[in-house]
Image (cartoon, rainbow, N blue to C red; front, side):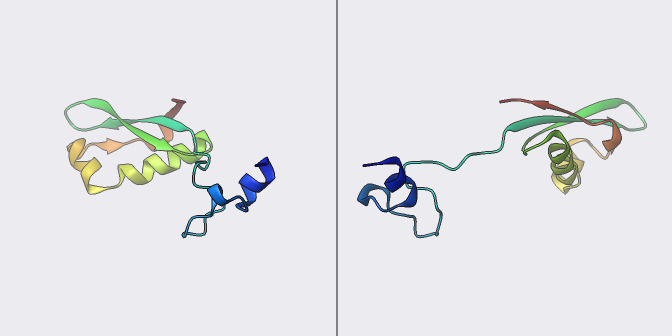
Amino acid sequence: MTLTSILDGSHPRTRRRASGSHWPQFLTPPRDPMWLVTIPTRSRRAAGAQTFAVRATTAQAAIASASLAAGTSTALLHRRGALIDITAASAVLRD
């Protein structure tokens, strides 16, 4: 067994998945790092923050993904209708 036969799927133990993935069965594809994005919130009563855990390649992509998640009805209910300030969002690399 050589590395080339493993990666190209020609070795019997590394047959390609039916989904057409180019990754052998025992290897997992690389995952984007996890980011914790904190978005400040403000309502008539108080100020706060809402945090989202997202996978993205860059901090900017993580903030963009979190802003989409912040627009869902579940996120809006969680923050009880408070407004978000996406321009003040911050992203911290978790792993």
